[in-house]
Image (tube, rainbow, N blue to C red; front, side, top):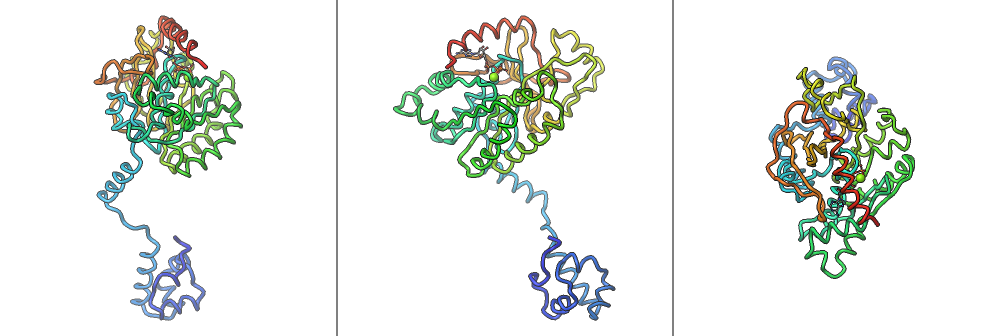
Length: 376
Ligand code: ATP
Ligand code: MG
């Protein structure tokens, strides 16, 4: 803006010519002089200089926006960008329509809790034809742990949308739209991000899934918590990909044990209650998201998947649109199903605590037998 040429601002010819003759060509050059300097330099009167300065200032100032126009613009953007419904009614209602476009949505939880099951269903929903409530788009599925099971995905599709999957060639067509990348290192993933950027900007891709981001980072860092600065570039790149392409980005994150003397401090977490830490000691394990605080701030929505007393729960732990809520869920042949669409509100430490007890491992392991049956 500051380098905008005065000759292109439609100033009266008399003053434009004088400015040009004195080598004042850009808005910055004119506006960095006082009005008296200009009067002296151009040899014109105060009224003429004041009017020229006002004209130049107006030409380079960003247009004023009222709160109303900003709100209208936001609604327009949301209509354009929208959400991809998860078809989990309670969750869709809480998130005002589903997983929002243009931002990062994170699924965090212990191994075997259902993160990949959620991702597989979302991949199917994005590739489903629009007339059946899908986005009819391509999906990029980054499978960092080589756990992607096409057989399980087809099973989820055939059980969830039997009428569509039974149509001649439909399962094939949808599966053909889901591109699975299996990077073996962070640098391979980093390289593929450039290609992903091109595909996203060409508007072919309607959903980007990274399952899991923590696994990609831990390849480089072993079992240790990743250093925040090494994540920084990836966080900003993926965030800007989401923003510019307006594509929903779904990322999974694993959990790690936290040392007793470290307290998690996320801005969306209520840490005001001094008794919380003490109470948390009573949990069999204290788990925190594997990717730390910078990552937690970068995601717009954090969904926590956890298990408590043999029951799985899906928690909306961070959302600009919803209060913290928890929904009990099960995993069946058709993927994740909520047992109750109402959910219940969470308070204090419960919002960010990731429950997982020894007894729950048995439940998840029993379930793992199911998935090995379907792997392939
Ligand atoms: P990880 O962090 O190890 O990748 P995850 O959270 O991605 O774990 P998933 O692979 O999504 O875990 O979930 C595995 C669980 O899904 C199994 O433990 C099992 O309970 C359940 N599951 C898989 N297939 C079926 C099925 N056909 N019917 C019922 N439950 C199933
Ligand atoms: Mg998984």
